[in-house]
Image (cartoon, rainbow, N blue to C red):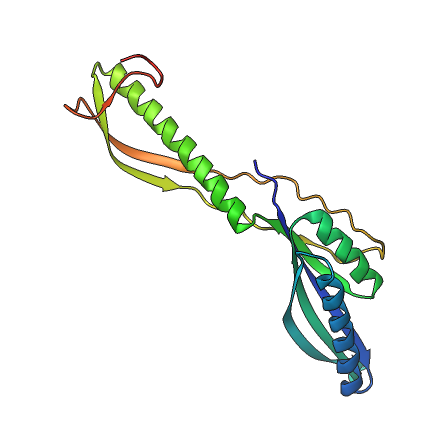
Length: 200
């Protein structure tokens, strides 16, 4: 199991007003403030993910407008993102969802380690079959590697207390690599069927 080292959140800057221009101006100011707060913290990335305008209606009549900026934040760790989200909720933004994932460098490192371990086990089992059949050598003809990357686990949040920081716990994710091979036993040349580390 691997602990995710990246955290993301989707936050909304929303404003309502009887006039569209006023609602858009207030929502934009709130979004700009949110981006400024996020970018004050080293390693936090902020981007605009969406912009929406809706009519506000009562009894079938339009009474005003609702404008929403949807922002996406990414941070190198849950603790850092939790501090930023605490400031944003205090500033009036809403959190619509958050989740955790592995950074590309971490994902690549973990995969290299798992590939090495999977191939070691493939060699061990191939040697076991070779010895059980009474042969001295085997040859691995083909290898297939499989295994899905760990899923991004979203967490939906509909209401958040305005406090800083928010306690975020990423938990762990199971990552696996499977190795399947086609092995020829009894080959004239190839790998000796002795256990790894044994004397020739």
